[in-house]
Each structure stands twice: as C-alpha cells, then as structure tokens.
Image (cartoon, rainbow, N blue to C red; front, top):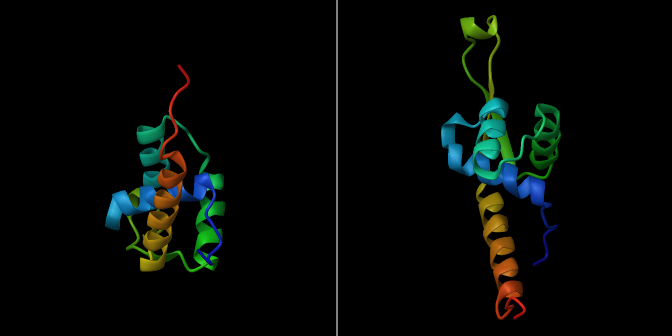
Length: 106
C-alpha cells in the first residue's frame, strides 16, 4: 500500500465530497453524511478532517463568490484529488478482501 491509511471518518468525509461534486462545502458535507449514515458530525469535526486531508494533499479548496445570504462571505468549496480517490478505492478493496469468506456463525 505505501500510503497512510485513512480513518473511517476521513473516508466518510471524502466520500461525501466525491458524491457532492462541485457543491461540497462544510454544511453540505455534514448534511450528506447525516443523510447517508444517520451520523450528525459537528461542523468543527468536519473542518478538522478537511484541514488534515488538505495538508495530506487529498483535497483542495477554493472560495466561491460572496453571497448576500451569508452576509457577503464566501463559501469554501472542497474537491478531492485523484490520489484521494485512488486511496479510497484501495482501502475499499482491502476491506472487501478481509470480508471475503467471512460467514455469520450458524
């Protein structure tokens, strides 16, 4: 593998970014996670994960145009990098390999 593995929460945040495409910003990421997993992560937890993944080169961010509804502030949008998607796929494959042959006890 060679790369550091992602924790479960980082994987979930990255998958939310992939699913949201160009609409991935903190609030939409939190909403996507809540809708798909039933978990309600705090915005702070998502921010911390995003900052950590940006430092690792797994996501990039840019500011959108300021909006009146946000008092003239801009949203910070996130995009996954190609290496992040490769890493997610590698970890999915590893997990599926571990599950292969595991049966529920009778």
